[in-house]
Amino acid sequence: MKKLSIFVVLLIVVLVSCQKEQYKIEIVEEETSLSVEEIVQLTNQNFLQTPESTADENHEFFTENDGLIDAYTATEAAFDEKSLNNGLIRCLSGVGLNAEQSTQTRRALRAFEQRNERIIASHRQAFRQLTARANNARLDLLNQFQQGEIDRPELARRLNQLRENYRTALRELKASNAEAFSRSFRALMVNLHDIMTNRQWAAFTECLRTN
Picture 1 (cartoon, rainbow, N blue to C red):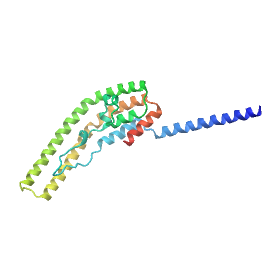
Picture 2 (picture 1 turned 90 degrees about the vertical axis):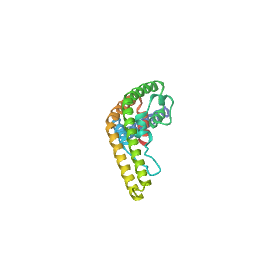
Picture 3 (picture 1 turned 90 degrees about the horizontal axis):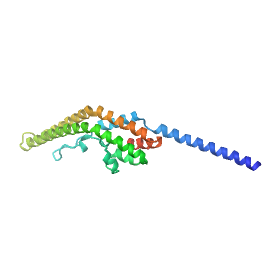
Picture 4 (picture 1 turned 135 degrees about the vertical axis):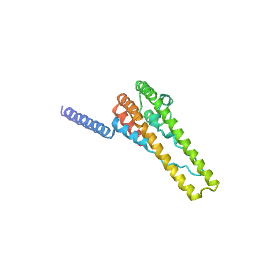
């Protein structure tokens, strides 16, 4: 009987310890998980970042993916293919969605893609016009230099100014579309937050934050 009592006490201690440990894990996950609004703001900041242009005498103006980011160009097809070319899709693929969650996520991505279709098309058109103008101006400067109308220091100065003008224009273009992209992305994040478990959401947002 005494041995049985000791066993019961030990069992209670173990159960309480396990419950405390589980509580600690949940608290850590809650503290490190980003909210929907936090991930929307972080993504918007990433979109608005505009890198320095590398255009010079030998290289044209070019910005990868027309200045768009993976988070705003994720598609249902990329999710079905488990594409590694899109950062958001990679993060979704890594959280262990079950069949029902995958079906719901596919539906959310389809709606997201449809909302973004017009925004992306408008952005790409404006971006390509902007880049074409910058490259035409670059060719004009190179022609002036080759014709002896300007010397190399002046060419370098004007190319540098052209790069600054291009970056400013690209930043303004992004800013003009940022609110629409954020609104659409927020709706996607709300849906995904509802679809995922707390642990999946924590892993997903951490992946987005570090990629």
